Amino acid sequence: MTDIPTFWAAARAAVPELPADPPPAERAWGFGATPEQADELLALVLAGIKTGTASYGWDYEKDGEPLPVAGGHDIVLDGSGEPRAVLLTESVEVVQFDEVTSEHAYAEGEDDRTLESWRRIHREFFEDHIDVGRPFSGDMPMVCERFRVLYPR
Picture 1 (tube, rainbow, N blue to C red):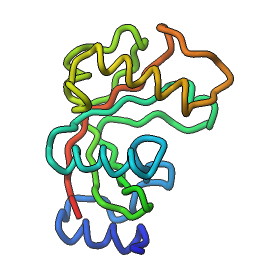
Picture 2 (spheres, one colour; picture 1 turned 30 degrees about the horizontal axis):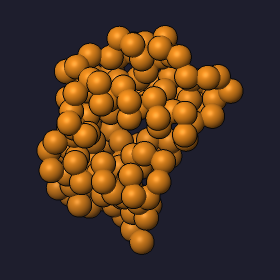
Picture 3 (cartoon, one colour; picture 1 turned 90 degrees about the vertical axis):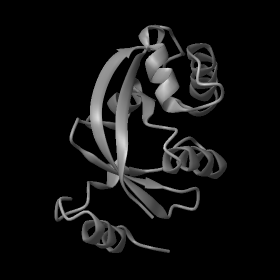
């Protein structure tokens, strides 16, 4: 298994403008809630289909983590926890669940890429995998990120 410092050194060799130090530990993560979801969504990223993601603002609040910022870097892990890509966050917008746009849903690259399927998938995900001590609601804050891959491994 490749550790983060070794992966970051390889990424910096390929992309010298990356900062000397890797992002903080909370910025190394896998998509979804299962190894299968992590691998499936990572494949969409590496294929250039998935250029956006959305997470729950209440999750950041519960965990005491800062929100992502434009210009920040993330390390995406596969389903086995192996680092596979460095992303550059291009934009971050916090909107209510019911205000996520069809453009953002399309950028997420999942299912048929429609807003309707995005809402279904994300509501099911929240209800099945997220416990922030609050029920799902249409006005829950969503952290919508757009990104690009700087380094794929």
